[in-house]
Image (tube, rainbow, N blue to C red; front, side):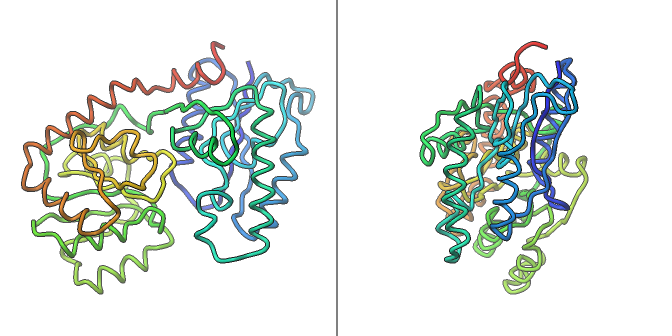
Length: 343
């Protein structure tokens, strides 16, 4: 059985989407399917470039390209789910967020207004044509319902290398690995570091467009001895930093899914997240497997101090998080079964 997966490619911008895409293709092949991936070059700006790609996708049909029959097409991202196939399944990572929940956060722009209107119509029509509609989290499903009136079933998948995560004795630092971008809100954690009473360090891994800004904040606040920007680290280093952390901070704005939450739970570490962080709220139980706080530096600092002052309870929270992860029974096998069934 031949399965074509469609997704986007944003050159030199790496993140969780790449893990998601690669994980699905590997899982399909591992379960006996012939799977190929079609990645579409995606540019966020100008809006006319996005519209051009929408038009290309809408005019593309992939049931029998080059006289090779494709049995199923799985689309993960906008606008690829606008392509056509008689057995088309959409598993939506997220829509074009600038046309939805991030729309009001952008400067006024007639071109963006036009794209927003077109994208909402495009999504409703394209996703209504699919045989089945899934979302990669409950949060993404909620957006599809709110903005497009579409019902999508949440379908969770494991982070890469899930079997490699482990727990070790906690050291006095909190860990936050992610792209350095404003929506990830590393600045919230840096601001919180100014307010800590305990001797807890802050380790931030990853790279991205806000590195210079975050470095300037650390310099401005005199936090060089407390806050470290580690840059890109290896998978082995990331796993080790998780294992020995006191806890993990993951407080992005309205995250779609969030591997950081799951990786922390696999490492048996409590997670501090925020009331507006989206996806992590599906997993973190306030006071049980971590803390859900307002996106406020003082609130974040208080919970970091609490982890340090109650290290035995923090350890128990982390263990409860690992048990909660196991209870979800998240696996690629379940994903493949839901999307395409037996080969």
